[in-house]
Length: 490
Ligand SMILES: *Cc1c(COP(=O)(O)O)cnc(C)c1O
Figure 1 (spheres, rainbow, N blue to C red):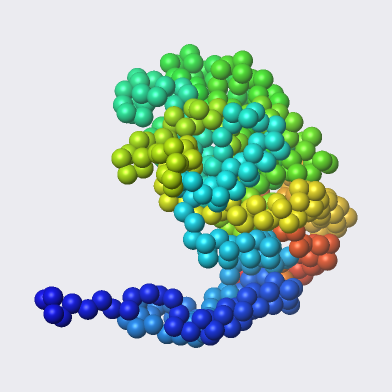
Figure 2: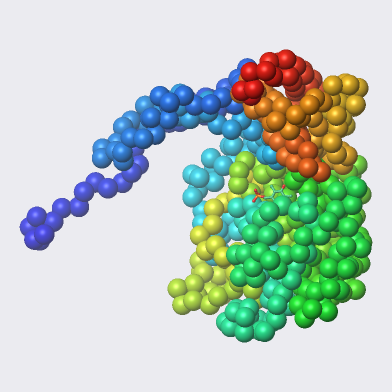
C-alpha cells in the first residue's frame, strides 16, 4: 500500500446512532424482565426442533445484520431452548436459578469490560471485599486468600496444586512431581464429585492416585476406611498428602464429618480440603450452619456462588487458609507484568498471582450486587427454604405407597423412585417423560445400585406447588409406562 492510497477505515464498533441503540437496548432489557416475570408460564425445558437447530448451521456472516434482527433470533431460537434452570420446576443436577439483580450487575460488568487480572482498580477491590466476606463467613484467618474462578471444578484443581506445593515444596514448580521421587496420594469418598479425580489427573498426579473411600449409611466418608487406606499407603511407600471432604454431595447432599476429618488431617499432617460446591453457602443460614462444623478448620474450601448463591453463571470460588502458600503456587514474574508502587501497575499482589488465569472477568460484581442487595440473611433464608422443600418432598414420598425414598435427605437433594418391576428402566423412562413434558426437570442417578429420580432443589423460585407437580407427574408417567409395558418401547 503506497502512502498516497493509505486510508484508515472508520473502524469503531460503536453505533452511529446512540439513540437507536438505546431504544433497542431497553427493549432487550424488557424482554429479559418479561422472561423472568413470566417464567412459570413456560415449559421448564423443551427440545429444539430441527428447524431451529438449522439456524445455527449458517456460516460466519461476512457483513453484519442489524441488532434488532439478531435479538429476534435470540428470542425465537435460543431463549426458549435453554436448559431451564431459571424455572422453579427445574430440579435436575445442581443448578442455581439466577436473579434479576445478578442479571443487571452482569450487564454493568460487561459495559465496564474490566479485566480483573490485576492492576490498581476498584473492580479488584470489589473482588477483595467479597473474599473478606467469605473469609469471615467461613471463619478463616486474615492471612487467607481467595479467588473467583469459573466453578468448583477449577477451584478443586487449584486446591490440589496448592497442596502439592505444601507437600513437595516450591521446587516442584520447576522440577515437576516426578523429580521428588514421591508418589502422592489423595483421598475422597465414593460420593465425591468426579472433578476431584479430574483435578488429580490435570495436576499430573494421575487418577489412580485418588483413593476412593467407601461411604457409611449416611453417605459420608467412612473414617475407619480412610485411616486404613492412609496407613496402607504409607506402608507401601506412598506419600499421602490430600483429603477432600465433601460438604453437600452431588448425589444425595451428604456432608462428611468435617470435624472428624479436620482432627484426622491434623494428626496425619495431611492437607484438608473441602468441596463445598453448593453446600458451603449453607453458612449463610444460621439454622443450617451448624451442619458445617469443622469447615472453619479446612486448609482450603472450593464452592460456587452460582448454585445456592443464585449468582448467574459462572462464579466459583477458592478460599485458601495459607495465602502465602497460595501465592507461591501460582505467582510468576514476567517483565510485561512488572509491578509498580504507583500508577496503573500498582496494587500487587494481583488476582493473577493466585491462579492460572491472567485475563479474568468481573465475576465479583454480580456476586457483590447479589450479596449487597439481598443481604446474607435473605440469601440464607432462600437456602433454608430449599432444604425445607426437600423435607416436604420426602414427606410426600413417604406418604405415597407407590413411591420409595432411596437416600436420607440431609439438605435439599431427594432421591426416590416409582415402585414397580424392572424399576431401573421404568424410572429412567419416567425422568425423560417428565423432562419432555415440560412440567418439571428432575435428573437421575444411581443409589446403591438402584436408578433414582433425583430432585435437587436449588432454585429460590421453587415452591410446594412445584414439588406437588413433580409428584403428580411421577405418578402419572409411572402408571402410564407400567400399564403400556407390553409395548416395551419405553
Ligand atoms: C457442582 C459441583 C461440582 C462442580 O462444580 P462446577 O461449578 O460445576 O465446576 C463439584 N462438586 C460438587 C459437590 C458439586 O455439586
